[in-house]
Length: 125
Image (cartoon, rainbow, N blue to C red):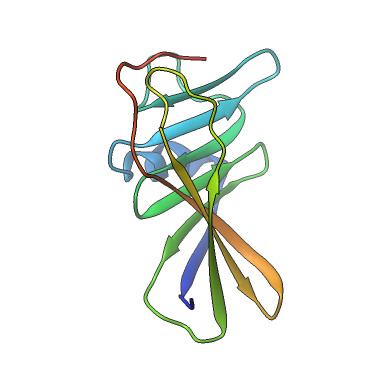
């Protein structure tokens, strides 16, 4: 399949703004001593690096910056590959997770994620 993808690079200071644009995001983040996978923001905030995604956009961040990835229509030069991600089953985690890779001329441009179903509850890792 072919698709167009938009990849925006933002400063670390834009992270909260970009995540606030997501609709009920799934967040997987990590810091020096802990990591987590949850739906929605929590009071203790975001860790140093991670990903957050909804059905339309994936936000990836680390200490250097923020990358926002969205699908934008059709582009015959960009190939879209979908593959299911193996997720250990735990209450509140997605039951099925899809990774969408975008390639142009054989090189990976970006990856986006989509949740294909979720469990009940909202446990943190």
